[in-house]
Image 1 (spheres, one colour):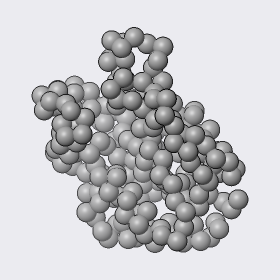
Image 2 (tube, one colour; image 1 turned 90 degrees about the vertical axis):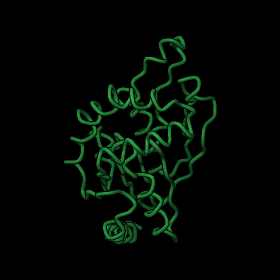
Image 3 (cartoon, rainbow, N blue to C red; image 1 turned 60 degrees about the vertical axis):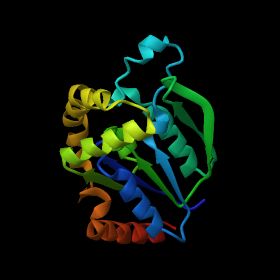
Length: 208
């Protein structure tokens, strides 16, 4: 198995990480690419009651099982297939379903805390932070959570003000300093994405 390039893409909720990721994957046609979302790795909470699970702060680094994520990435680097967990947001715990991932030339790890864990960060060849104004991030999160997750506008705003915003300022924003490149305004910044993908393409060719 040839060397695997690992790319980390971080940024606040609603920053446009997904758009940046999709643009990079589109530019990497000709290489095998896998996207692993950090959200897959929310910790299993089956040992807790449902009421206790409702108290989980999903915008805190402790919500993620980074040890399993790192283990899976190492297996992929070594040419081994892995079964990646998934999360059931209705039951607030890990699902029985897994997703099979084969080793690839490029693995993209996308998540709000993709650059927060030092051990995970040290595995990355390229570290990206998507930096978008807070007003755009809350609007995007509001649309997503009401349309895709069946939440009320009031609950999304309350969570944003009491949890998401303070957690972003405390834990996510500081990880910007670890990024190799900061992409303002997410997927709409075509120039930054083109520069980034050119660099990634060169790195992938060198490693393979």
